Length: 439
Image 1 (cartoon, rainbow, N blue to C red):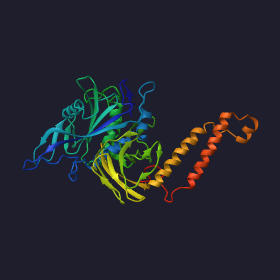
Image 2 (tube, rainbow, N blue to C red; image 1 turned 135 degrees about the vertical axis):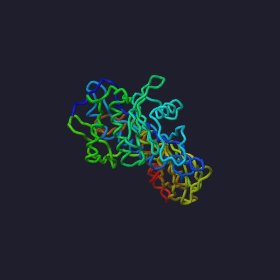
Image 3 (cartoon, rainbow, N blue to C red; image 1 turned 90 degrees about the horizontal axis):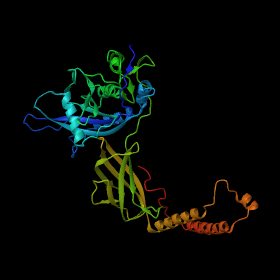
């Protein structure tokens, strides 16, 4: 195998992926438009089908995994660009301004139509603006795309990657993927094939080979492994088919060994506005309490739509239940109650969370506030404590200053108050572990 050579240009060192699920208007025999591909007809608000969430989850996982680490080990440049983990920046369903006639089994567009769609979406703010590491990956499930060399994605090709320069002089790297099996093995295989080549040779526009990594025959790192993948079957990584790429240090086409380090999806948290003076005092019974939901992925905020709240076990929602925040009338008597929250995030994933809360009586709340505030006072006055302090040793050898003695007397009085207060704890235990117990 001829060696691969780096030609001095840019690499996508920390690739920032924007997933675009391309669709066109398809007509029924009576001339009415069909529901576009990638949209779930069973949802009232026309949310994405589950495959959109699955593909986005795959992308988020693979760009932060050992698959990228093997690519980095092979194609980072000593003294030059260093490849590392990437990220999934955004996901969008975008309709091309094209209508497919009724009864047409397939519809064909040109790669220039894809470039125009990406450019228009950038200028209108539908997708993030391009940066040095941006890569827009476009998935088509019912559209054939002619690439720069005349190949047809969806017939004789599974995908291609390219680059075009916009009017601002920015090079925009993109991939087109045949996703007729939606989130199936062919889609994930072709996605990784094109992605590793886009990372290591992002300025290949299909006519000029670019100035990244390729061999003397202008072949790229996954192209030379296509026969190995066909002969041996694609390797499976994190439950998905992926493409091999040439690993010069191993002198073979490679993919990393499978592991269990799958990057997690979104995490939802439900919280209650039930704090007073810095003290968590529980959630009062028979009271209107504001709750809020939030979601994050890898520490970044995950935007939510199609929100819905339900309350159980004697609690009732009041007013709107289709926003991130919701007002709940808590049960009349001290008890556990459940809140359920569902939403769809910006990556097309249906999310749900159930949280269990404990409402407490007025007597319990008053007692908890007293305990909490007294604890704050004790900690404030006991400032001179440190892990190495030994009262028997230090007070036996050192004079006790008046200020320290005064703080100690005050501390002793406060501790007496705290012990007395704890002995008067209401019979029903209040929720002292924070607002959310489980979910």
